[in-house]
Length: 104
Image (tube, rainbow, N blue to C red; front, side, top):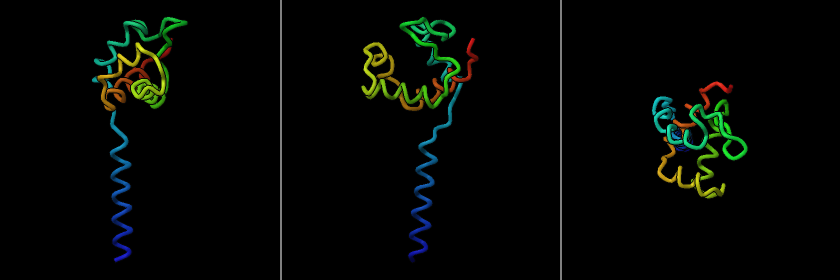
């Protein structure tokens, strides 16, 4: 009985971990990232000093930043408005697309 309980717990934890890692859809990210071009430039290379480049950055880093803007951990009124309607999956997709672009 104890062995079954341990195996069941391990199985539940493995499924939870797998669900936490979302597969990215780069094409969906490309479509959603179009809104970013207004400030970050048509090629997402940024417009220093106000708008940083988004290309060539790690996807997990970009996702974390988007989530921080949405939660208010990072305070920026423009970005708060940009991410308010994004789901976690949208953020993963956008980040995957932007990280796939070569930095110039």
